[in-house]
Length: 96
Image 1 (cartoon, helix red, strand yellow):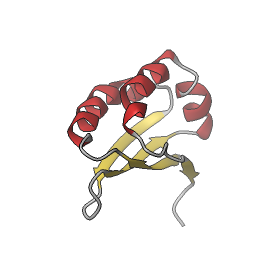
Image 2 (cartoon, helix red, strand yellow):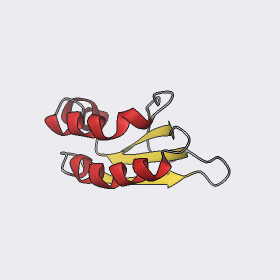
Image 3 (cartoon, one colour):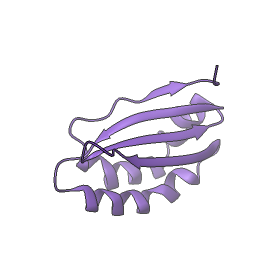
Image 4 (cartoon, rainbow, N blue to C red):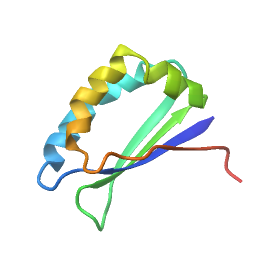
């Protein structure tokens, strides 16, 4: 299992709209092969910052499976408009 990690910086004042769009987008990613779970956590001390954690069976399930699907295009249309700057995605392996 791998964990996809991204810090999402949502433009000020758009947090409620982002959270509604995320609720709509979650089923799109959940329908992907190799998807194991998702968490989106708001920062306690920094308004507009969110931690995205997605568990996958493999990096390929995210990169080739989800990102090359029509569902990703819908995900992108729902969510990418809120980010400034665009998030950097990293993958993490098994715990030490």
